[in-house]
Length: 377
Image 1: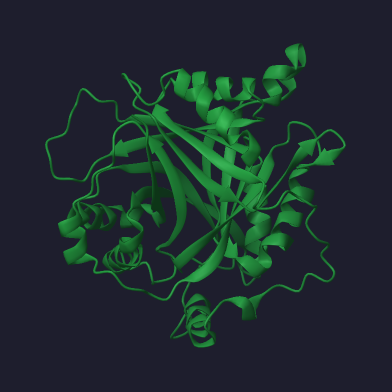
Image 2 (image 1 turned 180 degrees about the vertical axis):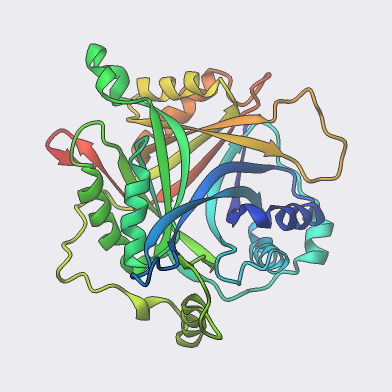
């Protein structure tokens, strides 16, 4: 029997040094399913001047992890607050945490320790701000230059992960050698008011108007705290610029006051709006995602991105070592009108049962931009 539920999906991107605190907080909460994505975050480093010359500022990459997990909607604020406090994410440079609503389809219900969640994360509200997450998939080797451009704008700390692509490349025959299968995935958590400007910069810089160059899509999320420490170096004042900005955000009630003037920057190309697009993620054992991704393409889906994850459970129970802990997500951006056909096709292939025991997540997408002949979608 197929189980459909609406849950809050929480994503937490943290510096590698914060991982022990994250693991401890998740263990206390007893959450049953955690997906961990290895990544790297990029920031600007102010180097000391040589021989009296001006100090050099260069991009630097450090290891990071993105934790993704789901909780019942009523516990979303409490869980986010508890994790942010435990990992000290309110300190600039530590990480970001945000949530969004997802529709889940699975063969076995996801069970939570409701008693523990109720005692540790009482229902209530915490001050959260509306942000946009821009996810950009480009050929491997291109994300670093995009990240450097975004850092110069001072809006967020980019995160880069890796994946594989299916789609246009598989339809080009011998010409597919011109499009690499290895992809980089760039994540940007930015104020909503700046999302359109940054999309325009990405499309221009990454040449997304050309075939095989990738695509970018936008989702809206609820953020408790966002890492805006774009620059590191020797501290010269009592507070860093990021701490001053965070304090002003709190006083002003939002980040809208620091919007970028885009009057001379150009605007983002047109894309499809939230009513017509969705991000459909198939989560299954590593190695089996290709089958379901290709099946989705057979019924009309476009490009597919395969991203590796590590699966963990923090319920405190003895681990089942017979189950694979290597997972893979198969992400598709599709029109909502195609959603039922894709779900029916992958269900017929046994995604939810047997040894696969896969899961489907569906999240609303506000806008997507990519090459589509003479049009962008």
